[in-house]
Image 1 (cartoon, rainbow, N blue to C red):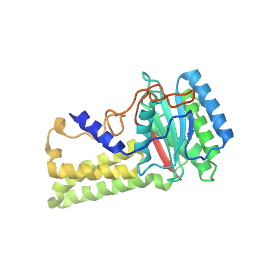
Image 2: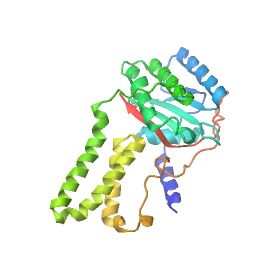
Image 3: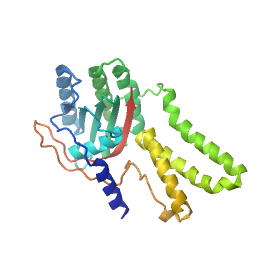
Image 4: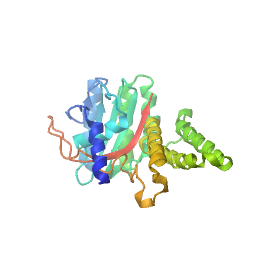
Length: 284
């Protein structure tokens, strides 16, 4: 029953979203890449797929249509069916220049290799420095090369880049936890409420970790708090508690898409791979 409602929720989220056609390994809907860059990317990605069967696709979007790039990304990956059906070894590099957002979306089968942490490092170190200079060609090429290097096991990790903004979610949820914990120690009348806020803070924080979106983290914090408060789910047994995140599946346990949707023209098509929300996002 839980999976049914999660599946229904996914369909509702996807309602009204239009996806670009899969016309090749590079889908430049936003028109930000030069012809030379697209040709070079196509050659690099084609050779990589022939050597490993991993499917990596670059897509630039005119608009996210009001959606969070993480939600849009994994649904696009499932709709196109990027990656092989049995191995789910697809990767999307998504660029939304108008919203100034970029994401690396990783298929189930590659989440252990191209981890969320490594995806974030690639975005911060190999992509955003170019995008901030307005060099989309350079950023996409650099990002693709870094992704393929990780998949081959030759990427040189560099975790030195960090920004104050990266600590915003930790500060936000940490502050909530500190205030609530302090009140629960000294003010007994607040303990009923604080006992619900503490677990909600953890849920919100882990939602952020999985999606790299502070908005999503705050959303899960708010929803879980009201559920705990009014439905008294926190006082039930563990087996009856609602579960918002499961393993590496991102938002949902199963998707509405998948399958081979690749007959959109050209000599390239998705192999039926699936996605569950793995990867990372960034902005500039």
